[in-house]
Length: 321
Ligand code: SF4
Image (cartoon, rainbow, N blue to C red; front, side, top):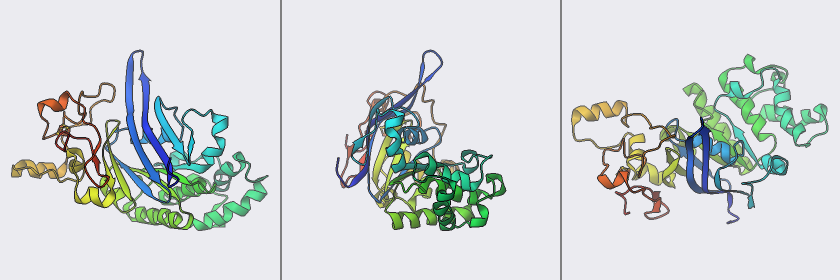
């Protein structure tokens, strides 16, 4: 593993059992690297497997196959006890700050809990020395410490979620749609807070979102997921200027359509139809059931994710395969 990388994910696979015989193919053979101090945006519709991918990387779920290398150490098959020191290095910020904060704990106790769990402080009093400055750092005050999550607005609750994640001084933070549940007016404030922390602490972010515009401002690199697989990945600027995969183009609302009536409909919903079930994903290219350019081989041959130049990788039979 290159020392430059905080995270390397190789062929990561996560399947869940559904009933006696069915398997949900949530994540199917994903590989990428994340450099220290950088942000990788992971994008795709609901149900594409991006959150399962994040939760597998952070080892909330046990991977079915593949490898997760964090800061040079393979943590793929570590048992929970062994994982403890590595958990400190990677933390998660969740989409719904209300559901992820314990309603019966004060904000002070919520933020102090990981410090005590990792034995970074001896007791509550000692934890206050870290909790109060952190509250101020995320834009809250010492006076907020004894309140409960339900007494806060959505934006304030997400600030508490950020404080809880960052109090351990992690190196990698997985942000699972951290602004999707917030008012637009609050989203920029939360993003700016995350960016400030990144600059200050050299943090690396894996930033998960359901639309490309949301990750544009924060990401150095962007990966696009469809039905458990990566279909395109490149530097962020390149993917916005030169999207190659029809699904990425659809997400950007830029699939060219000759018929003006259809084009108008397309503006409302840039990709037709619903994402198929991950229980029985389509054969070949998983996007073939919705792709306006699908040809017969697309349903039979799975396109590989190949580098088409300057590290721009794409999995599509139209792109040099
Ligand atoms: Fe469309 Fe075929 Fe490319 Fe898949 S491989 S995105 S179906 S053209």
